[in-house]
Length: 129
Picture 1: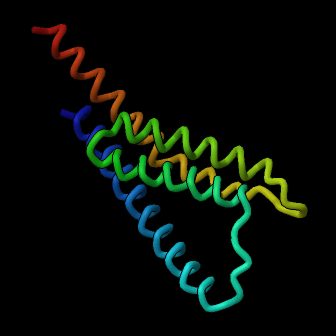
Picture 2 (picture 1 turned 135 degrees about the horizontal axis):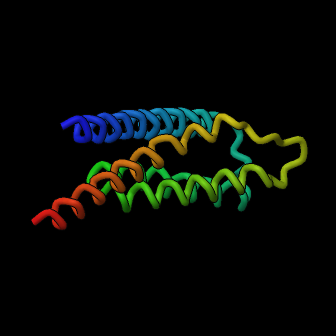
């Protein structure tokens, strides 16, 4: 019984944090897009477009993880790793790497831990039958 409570806490923590991150990112993104249309529009460079695509894949992985924890966790974790690497090697002069981006790994890792525990307990149940 205690094992299922821990799994439930891990799952709901990942869901809450991941959902809040997706909502927060969408609100910031929509706000920035609205602000961008008011001022002069210099356009986006290729590197920034690649970053947006990778970030979108990571957020899509978090949304997918609400239904398929393993697949969504892997997609979001890989995309966040790629995103962090790209931000760390940013070719823009005077850019810096914000270590706060590492917080976005948390829901992905929690989804994978939950998936692993769920898979492990399913295998044990099959072995006992």
